[in-house]
Image (tube, rainbow, N blue to C red):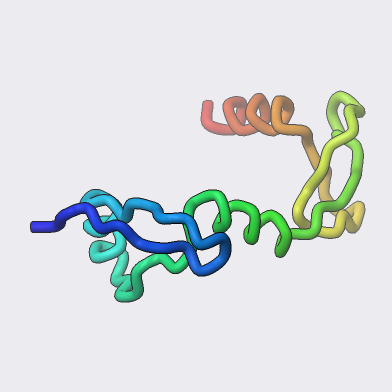
Length: 91
């Protein structure tokens, strides 16, 4: 039903492929507009929009970054400790 399309990125002007699988995913999610930016430009833009905050892991004390302003009300964990904490809570 879907076929790969070659689109041009509005940001960098590079051509990129909007694959049949991506088109099916967009349709499944109800998205009607084709992507206007290539994958690299979308990733870069998303990173620019997200402000990261420096903090320390409540478990191991390692420095880590989070995309929200820490308030001190809840513990913040690094990736490794968060994964361990999640595994422990599912048991």
